[in-house]
Length: 458
Ligand code: BES
Ligand code: ZN
Image 1: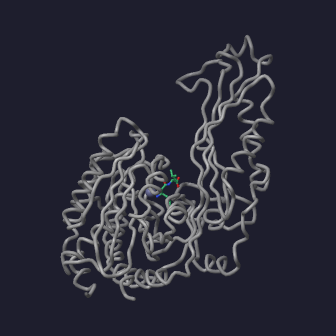
Image 2: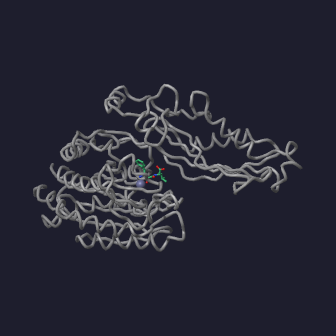
């Protein structure tokens, strides 16, 4: 079975492939908002029908949350488990979008054609690159070169509450030789990538309560403790002058980057001025003495993702608020233990809260970092296949983002993952005006056709 006619078919079918993707993008499958439950269900149904249309045995599997989609198709090569997520992030702030996020369109831009809309890059457009590659193989050769299990999740953007129980219950059905996860990016528009390091993620929400009601800041201010002042002090204490995180024991398990990897990353010639310049900044904000790629890929972070308290409406109000809260996340690397860090963080915070105030903690997920072992020959096969499709050779890179499913495949199924995706840094995932380049979609589909071919060769 030759890959050439498959590639030709992908080229000639591009308009239809884009139409199918648009159909899926029009379904507002926002997993975190209960108001969109029916739409998540509808996206799962759409995928089941689409897989079935290629002759894949597929079904929607209920969970206590949004359904999973599982499909199976036989083939001669190794058994692959393909993962993508059909849910998307909320769209707010809606007024910053130049168009309806769920009325996607192909737009001409100075950098080429892009598909604009929520979920284009994260992750529906990426997920469909794999499906479209399979469609073209099937149409051309009547069969696929590998045995494939498709596994699509609808809760990735809301912390995957049903994932672990589902994997445990269906481990035998999902176990495979290797998992392919399409939810990451290219290194840049010329250099494709296999992501071999993912950071973990720990989420904590803290609420400080002071007085039992909001007060007049003239009548009580000075005498009564202001919980915003307490919160601000805690947040300010989380980093030292050198940008290091001060939670006790935080750096336990943070490895030194091997010299070889460091040299490889330096060889990528990452331009941090351009990277920060694209978002209106210029100075690196992480630990002193570290390169930008280290800060993004191999160093842990602590970020405040949201903060609230007091009067935030129009105008001014002299209030001394009863409560103040912050959502804080830690990106983790190496063998940093999220549970240990949660415990130490809470202890540190409690010690900073004055006797007159209270602190309440709410947890928002905990996943450790994952590092893929590139010894599996599939990595070199996929790297070669990607290098044939793109202008430059594929790189092994790290990623600042978190994809906990890779760790779960490893621990619950014993299946290693290979992360390959075609997103770009300027795709604005999770932000207004998310887009996916038509080139990412088209060459991404062609890349999977080549990778399937490469993996099927003994
Ligand atoms: N696709 C992203 C992860 C990602 C982002 C990979 C950037 C590569 C580059 C994924 O959908 C995501 O956003 N994950 C969340 C974590 C999840 C547990 C909510 C993240 O990284 O914040
Ligand atoms: Zn994603």
